[in-house]
Length: 501
Ligand code: BES
Ligand code: MN
Ligand code: ZN
Image (cartoon, rainbow, N blue to C red):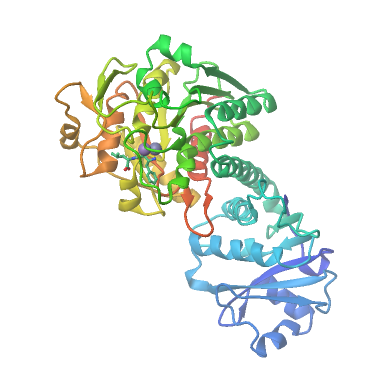
């Protein structure tokens, strides 16, 4: 899909479709009002017949509106004008894009970016519209023999800015929206690809592919032998039940000064999580192909950062394995020595995410990071606590936590902080090793983060548990691309505040 921006009057648009709004109850948006005037009350007359009254979710397609050179005018119900907040705006845009897609138009000029959204700038509205449109148009049909897409399909959407003066400022918002949408799409595609395609080796190839596309990127993949030499025994203990060799992917983006400390992103890349010998029950086990969504979000974020050529350094570290039961798999009770030197009693082989992350987090210290953020589909407990609306956030540095929470709020990709108090640490006590890999029934998300915190003492660190947010289940099962928008907002803010160039 091609996205662009422009300013201009609706009657001058030679295009397939003009998109405008109508609020409850029957109040026209400002461009809709203009069209109504020019068309000598054509819209008012149609509306008076009762075909649309402005409720959210409604739409009405009009052809041959007098005075317009555009083929169609699409009226979109925007709900109550007073209730137009971030979330309502996103819903309205998504709905308008789906309605557009159902028409035969190839191109549209979209005026809903003129709506007043409480506390938001025009930049934000443009960027958000591009992202939401990208999201709404997404479909994953590469593995179907018959594609859903019709022959005539929407190719270009032009969002409008109110005055010409705003164009240059919004140009950056357009670029950001496109880059984030591309990062989200990559993350979703990788998540949706099944585990017989998306293997650890496949993820490594993807990272190499990105580095080929962008000169600012370089990649290094650590193979099993190298990891063994380094002493990444915890990571390897998860991989040893599988036929598929594990990888540790290091993808570096250099856009800042050579000396500038990088933001390090560590993504959990379990390409399938059967639970290992602590086997999971079979219902919905297919969804454990999504257990690499943390890894996918790191690749998606770094792609977007590279596309925007941000003046900052970002390093992605991706431990990737498959968690299988087999004759060579780790047994519950096995004790391994991690890269950090701590010995770990693996009481449950299904708590494998933390086992691959701990070695990757220890390894990350060598990059002299400004901060380290890990992203992981880590605990079912997080889905119970926060559902699918917020990612769990835990951190050893409160200012970093606050920055991430704010970024999530701005991007409409929210996180919610849970405590990492000392009191919880004792749940990880083991009678035989330095630490156990599970902490009992209570506070599962917190004890998982406590486990990770034992390996992150050397730097400022935050952990995002995306078990509830990385994909949606049910009939429309799909990866969401979260938390790429949150991470991108954080990185953009960092690049702007502390110009590292
Ligand atoms: N990948 C799962 C977490 C998960 C489960 C994410 C369901 C999304 C939906 C993780 O590896 C896991 O199995 N965690 C265990 C930890 C437990 C054994 C302490 C869990 O949450 O049950
Ligand atoms: Mn597991
Ligand atoms: Zn897992």
